[in-house]
Length: 611
Ligand SMILES: [Zn+2]
Image (tube, rainbow, N blue to C red; front, side):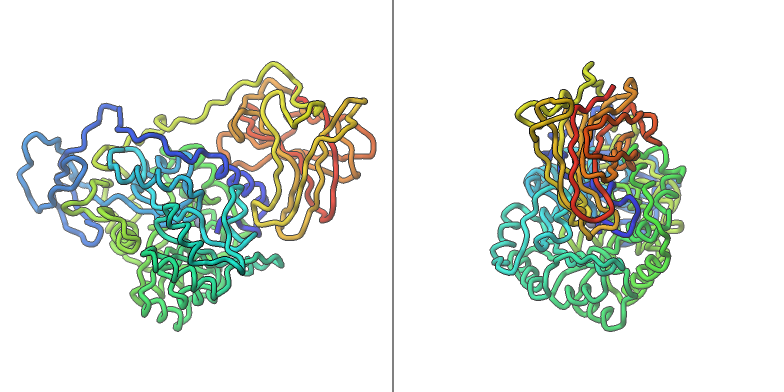
């Protein structure tokens, strides 16, 4: 569930999020111990109520030595030389586990600041898998969540998961599935995530290719043959039924088209399958506005980075409360039948944010009928058990000292998990102050006003770069090609031709080119001293859009101005101040795109300037 075709402007969002996935460096930076003077990973927490991941132990003493839990005892003399943390009036929890994320950039640090010390990444580039494994095995860092990851999700050619701007190997009718899964495991996949999604759950005419039931069964068998769990993305009850009958270990979303029926609940129970319902993203998709409300919670607000606030505020609308209610009802029925429910946020999808949304998910599980203790188990011991995360999810001797100390009693009021007093990762206290999260500074552009005259032998810019962009990132089918052509404006040597076809498939289709002003795509450049976007255009008499992507959040909505491309070269001058809501101090990209109506389009641009 990473694109929501029913939503206004989701296209632009998906484009940006997809791009962010594609451009972030995949290598993890070296692990490091905190350098804030709170270094050291041996201490004692005394006087706190302890929920050990499974049970409420009442007030107990927890001894941590060298980053590991050494003892949990009702009352103990504090070992000599260890720092004592006073837990009076507080509750100590195991580090929280988010069982459905897509992590890049600052995600692992954002999670840790909100008490999420382990997470399961459900789809992303496989190149980073060995690095993630090394990082979590090292147990030396004290500043970020550990990740277990699927690497590439298993999907059909052109299916869901292929639209995010990074190449994904796919399964077609001729694929040797056993060998294909073997390659994923060799890449380092910790588990196998498969996608059953044709978009038919969303009331749109568009369909995506997806895995057949026979292929799903082969994927599951191949994963199990290699001692890997197989989990499924589904959006519909019938697809969930099929995946579970095929032997999938769990579902990583709850379906929203129907409430679980008795036969399905029985099948889940009998097969011992689990569900990560991702109610946070379902609530967002239902237009609930709960993400935005979460961002206003005083216990979280001041700790949210700009990117987190941005994704939480991204609204899904139109409201569809039945979608959320069906999901809550299914969770209630499955939980009542004894099916394991695990917390997962699907961050950073619109309406969610890494770390913070896990606290929303806990509240939603309580709304679905879990007790606070059961919800806390869903965020700690259960995901550790169901995904085989060693030394995580419990406060017990021999476990990693991944701990969260909160004010008050979340066993009574689940929202008390938001009142975080301290987080430890591998026994190191996590620095939670926002200023420890470096925001990329906007760079100044060179003095040139000319961006590109397209008179050279390559598509170049005096500063920045050009890339094609289409709604394929959001599951659409529009196409674009861009190339240098001879004969530019005012008799110049060349111009940039942009041509393609707007095709059905996405509610808000687009295709065109994106200009990135910084050395790295989507990094901000300060253009506040510039007044106008000026360029020459000619084309097929369509109306086109210039879209400005700007602001602190990479997921911000673009500001749009339109222009028409006539048969003769013409100069277009767009005042930058007329990009309503744009933040010129942080310009990340400017797109030149065709949209509705469907059909072929062609236009040329030349002599692009930022004056
Ligand atoms: Zn997801």
